[in-house]
Length: 639
Image (cartoon, rainbow, N blue to C red):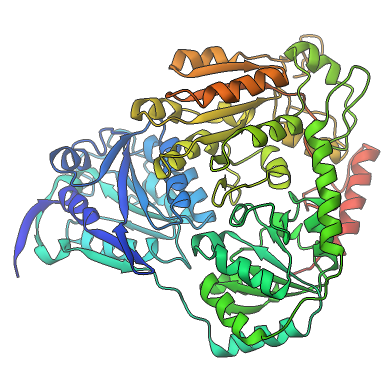
């Protein structure tokens, strides 16, 4: 057996360069590059290997470990999981910063390879800088926290362990049914240790992502179930996009005249204007999709994991039977469904063959539901604030609006801003979002004019994903304009990869919706009987001792200008339009500081979200909210 003597890190880099995937007969390199923030736990091991011979791996310098890992998630998501990034950080807080991102990747079933530095395997210098010592177990380090959020976890305590660990890592990363974060912890001493690795370990490996075919029995069950129903509803989930099965899904819907709603991950799999596309479904869904869903006698869910937002906490279509097409047996079995465990494209094609001349029995319901929603959408995009008149959008009257208008010098509403942005940006531009009220407004309101242009991280709703996610999406789609849609609360949590976008010359556009607070959660507490409490950004009031003083106003445009961004201060619709048009001409990343009034986002449109309301409270409004929650709960599925 021929061998080559390499350090563990050098062997790791050489192996990663030799990994390819094949899908539908097309091959490409699997690992595009590696995000790094070097520290003492990885710079002299993995860092040395990357400096000496990175191969074709592109090395990106992150600014925050969570930020760079979020960018890696977005890259893989935009690439439909067919190409990924790796991320390395130093021992201790550097590695711990990536845990949130690992959870985000796993929650969304997005493949990312995490390579955190670790404490010494020999334990000779213990406790090394940044080491946590557990008196009951000296084998535990910070990296053990990755176990709970990884689909595969390993630690390399000897160089030769690298081989089995990496082969297993590739198995999980390329498995569409069970992919997510893969963590291979690298003790810093082992990173530099040498071993005689077999040359065969470094040959080109092609990981074939195959379209899993459904069983004949499951297809027969699916066909029989559909043929027994009159008004089925399809759900377009993220699995349709990752399977690259959008056209198959659309042809299935058209052939059998079945309308469909979209999940956050599935949205823009098919263009919004298609007559059968009802738009967003569930808690953040619109009136058209939710109305049809409530009357459906069968839900055909393709590539979705049925989060509570899709099912409206299992209440939206509680009386309908459920059929699932999912490559994951775990997700396919949810809601006690009749399940077809298969690739989305393969499953739809097989069922279509068996359905023959079946056609759903819809009359004018689809057209009428879409027409009513289009009228509401037009209203939302034109809502304006007028002195003495509260915009009827979020369903809550808010007497604080005049105060915000004066503080911001703005009368912009969130829904009207979204409408104008949707109108003005390029049809093929990619929008990226994650948390707060914007995902709800966008799933309801955004008209996707081209496929795969709506990029929402809502499986984990990770605040701070937006800017880094936009950078990752730009790396995946360098020829398209990419827009991060972020609230000020999320932006303040994490926007450090703006600097990386400037460093790399990868232009992104940040649309910062500033309502001076955590507006989404402010809505939630007030809708459930509470007062506004620690969710607005206000100074502490010396008279009351509470956070109910003056509204905080921050000039984000000025801060962004210091970073080297092209920035815009937006307080009127005319300024917004001018900013969007001018931003298209820029070569550098841009930031639009848009001051929007609170409580000017959309409401629930017949959906319900199960949240924990206090059973005992002094306020009658909270007692009422609890009883309201209980009344919905009895209508929901219990499993």
